[in-house]
Image 1: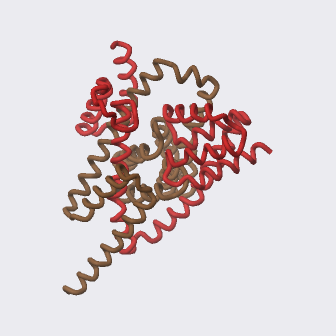
Image 2 (image 1 turned 120 degrees about the vertical axis):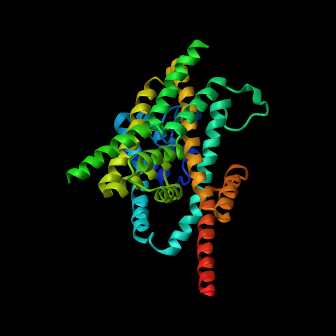
Amino acid sequence: MIYLELLWSFFQIGLFSIGGGYAAMPLIQHQVVDMHPWLTMTQFADIMTIAEMTPGPIAINSATFVGIRVAGLPGAVVATAGCVLPSCVIVMLLAYIYYRFRGLSMVQGILAGLRPAVAAMIASAGLSLVILSFWGQRSLPDDLSGINGISVWIFCAGLLILRKWKVDPIYVMAGAGVLGVLLYSVM
Amino acid sequence: MDEKRRKCGKLFLSTFQLSACTFGGGFVIVPLMRKKFVEDLHWIDEQEMMDLTAIAQSSPGAIAVNASILVGYHVAGVLGALTTVLGTVLPPLIIISAVSFFYTAFRDNAVIDMAMTGMLAGVAAVICDVVITMAAGIFRQKRLLPVLILFSAFAAVRYLGVNIILIIFACGAIGAADTFCRRRAGRETA
């Protein structure tokens, strides 16, 4: 039963990929390339490119892609459901525990220690995105002159607008997309 | 009931929009959610959002999905959580379904590439904005420890490649020890 196999494979991916994003990549490869003959390595690499170019978590993107290839649209739905099922159960349980116990001073102490760490991790992810946006790769290149001027301008304009007028970020992102098409076609 | 249904509708719309704009996955959606639910809608307070982020990060599964479950659960219980999961999962499901049928053409399309490159710069700006706001909040506490944690966690995750789960546990332990010491110091002086 192909649907059950898809469900079970992506359930495992959802359950064991802690840390999100690229942490899920080797797990997905193991399930869909090594364990099952669902994708070739080239197709897998293509998914990773597409997953990076399109919105959404990598695990969900690959679940949809693999599901469609293997068993059409129902396959995509089943694989995606399998992928989010472990999160639904575990995270809701943790949410219940958090709201029950967060009044305790020790729990508050732990959470106070976590907050700067969370800010640091977001800062690191943000820095990676800025580098990716400016230089088209994940880590800083040795030669910084290959910088993408248009991206820098869009970035600065976006940041200025956000800091000054506190607009809805959706507009900034959509505007950046439109600006990208306009500027790149002109230049 | 009507109030709850209205909130669920808003939850669905918000998470759907955010998810449709979240490139690269992972942490990117968290600052966007913070902006929407903390600053715009005032459904969640600043500290709570940070706590929810830590929980989302240390639970299995995609961070975007976990974070939206937490937000939905907080705003409207289990029904809210299911609503936000649906809202978060649908955009990638629809987009990838469409893309998978003509993915080589999609990969090589010039206009799509331009829009994506532009949007990437926009998303980077949004995240920087949020980081500035969060860091300012931490510096305003005027305590050395949170600032120290901020910088060492940044160095650990960025330059030393330390596992994120490990950092979360370590910082939680530091926070607990700090509370314990301060409480004892308070008792001795009293």
